Structure formats: structure tokens, C-alpha cells
Image (cartoon, rainbow, N blue to C red; front, top):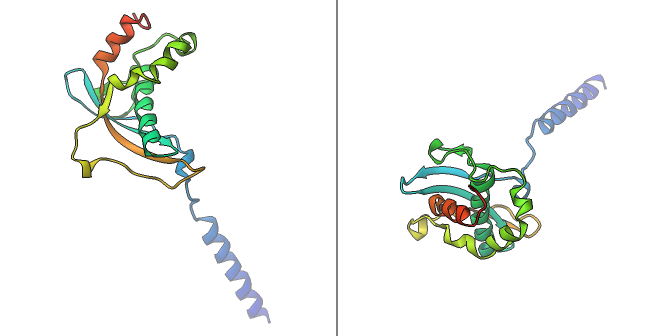
Length: 161
């Protein structure tokens, strides 16, 4: 009887240890993917990897492009190679809030002029669908961003000096 009780205690202990050490599954829908610098083309363009989520592929691609531009303008790119520079284009605080109408219009139509799919063969394009969460899907895109043209556009519109 004592041997049976010892065996049950040992089995329960092993079960608790094994299930307690298991890493929880990550839900990519709630993971915050940050923009990563892949290189500098030395002509005012930089190559970045950006993530976007959406209900379908087109919406996810558009969100990835917008996320890349938002990070370049407001946060700076801190991940990946140092060639892209970590300083944001817009350093004045509250610029987004003070120019809300401008940026709403910018991110609905104008932003497409400054970002493009990096030229790669179609089969090598980086579309990594992640597990669906709340009917959203995440994609990674390799993008070319024309930072010099973006900066001159922001200067012309009196957003930066």
C-alpha cells in the first residue's frame, strides 16, 4: 500500500514539473512586431522589414507599409543594421496630434509615393502568414522606403524644419 502511495506521489510530482516547465504558446496576433533595418541603398532609400496585420493580405500589406513609415517618421528604426539611422524624422513632440488632419490624409493616399515592395523574385517575397487571431493575419514585407523624398515632402508641408 505504501509503495502504491509513493508511486502516485512520484507520478503527480513528475506531471506537475513537466507541465509547469512547458512554455506557453504565443499568439502572434497580439505580438508587437517592430520594423527592422535590412540595409541602406546610399541613394536616400533604405530597405526595411515591416509587419502588418489585417483581415486579408491586401489590408495587411497596406498596414505593413504604414507601420514602416510611422516608425521612420516618429520612432526611428532601432532594430537590425545601424545603416538606417535610429533618429526619427519628426522630433517635435505632439506633431501627430497637432497635425491630425494632415496625417490622416497622408496615411490614406499620399504614403504610397514613399514606400514600395523591394524588388525580389515573386517566389522569394517574404509573406509569412501567422496563426489567425480574431480573424486577422500578419504578414512580413521587405520594403524600400524613399526617406530623402519623404523628408523633403515633410519640409515642403511645414511639418519639419
